[in-house]
Image (cartoon, rainbow, N blue to C red; front, side, top):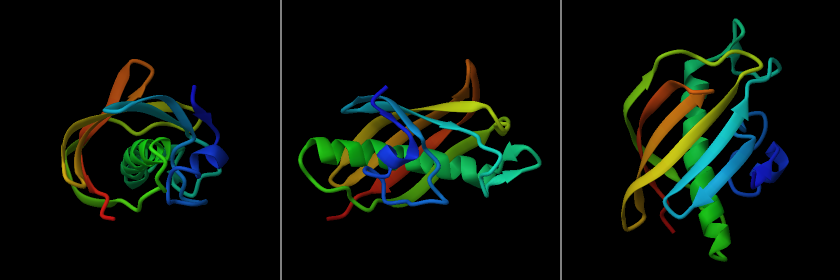
Length: 140
């Protein structure tokens, strides 16, 4: 594991509590990474014992932001503010429950200038619970 805990994660993403939706960075390569989040019952995004669907989408967006932010810092640059251009083909088969940990795979599928196309897969254990694509711009 590379980063563990929201305090460490916040060095690489622009979000702050109470909306930080990533608490682990398991792995990082130039074109892929794996992040995580354990669903906590105290989260403002938990409804009826499950993470709300909008919060799961926010988790995936922050996972992409973490990949980009970590990459920038490793190259000696400051963490950029990313702008989501679109979220496409995003499907959720189920919402994670309180106490479950999600692991999210990020794959940079293409880069054109400051725009990245990111493929996302969210799992609980071996079960895929969400997947989709996101375009993110990091203008200077």
